[in-house]
Image (cartoon, rainbow, N blue to C red; front, side, top):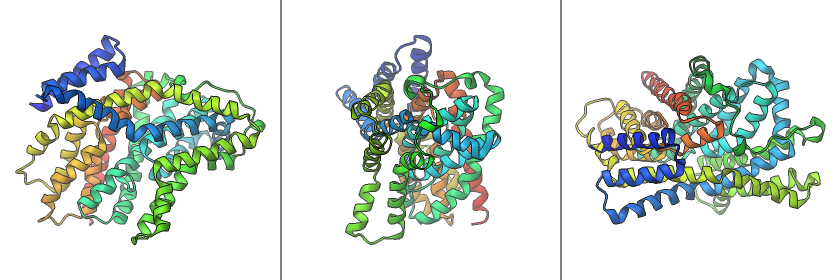
Length: 444
């Protein structure tokens, strides 16, 4: 059975990383080869599949991830992150800082991919946690939960947008209902789950974050840092560009040169590049920082994420051999003759595919192709099926997903602690999302 082979592959991967202490990237590549052979793939196609997986993963992430790391480094080195942190603390107070982080992350997450939002917010979250002397994970968990909710439920993220088209759902309605469902889901998977995890897994909350990924810590005097307004504006340039492009796409259906130009500027790669150039000016040149020092900050930011990029690429290789090995087709065959509600079927298929394939986007898109025929005789609101699919696609994030490794590395967690916190959080998020969809379905 393909699922059994996947399970054995995951166990081997955990053994290599946790017991043998083999490099994570090397472990991922080794297991990718073993699982591909176990799935019966043609030997001369295994290497091509692994190369395609690494290339596809990094092709999507490398540009945005690299530019985002540079942007975050410039804002951090100039003291912009420190200024934002101090202002939020003074405005919201210690008791309400977690709420402020959740709201900010949810708003930012609507426009940004999960990975981009993580790269931009991590330095700011770290600065706040350090200043308040609270565990890094205390603020990191709610932030990551909010980003993951928007990633799974809300257009313009790739999966919700694409499956809205596949189900012929109104994208505006998906966005509205997604926000209605996303708010309680974020509260449960963020602050409420945080209280539970702090009591049950206290060791994870003793971690101070991966300082090599975040860069060396600097001490700042508030008077020497950029203003709050310019610091926030510089950090949110990508959000602003992408949000404008999203609104333009939703409001203006007819194609035009202006719309095409705005959408081009709002593409993640373009938005991040323009934002970085602006940051070089606002956080560097305008503050009379020599261009040589700015260049040094940019170089260090890439050096710090080099191994993380390889690990993410390795996760992509693992995912690709599972896709090419026919795991997705096998899961689809399990639900050919079912009489369950389309909402439950969509969630279950997406959840199984997510567990086997890793990528939430791939799981959601594959599910849409399988569930769409079931909707012909169904009276269920298509927007709800989009959201049920999204909920299933984010369940139990583990070793075959890039997000797992990003959270592990950035938060400085062990494998066990990442499963205890992040993997469990995404499961809570998925189940809560499904419950909200079913509850909303009673009124629509």
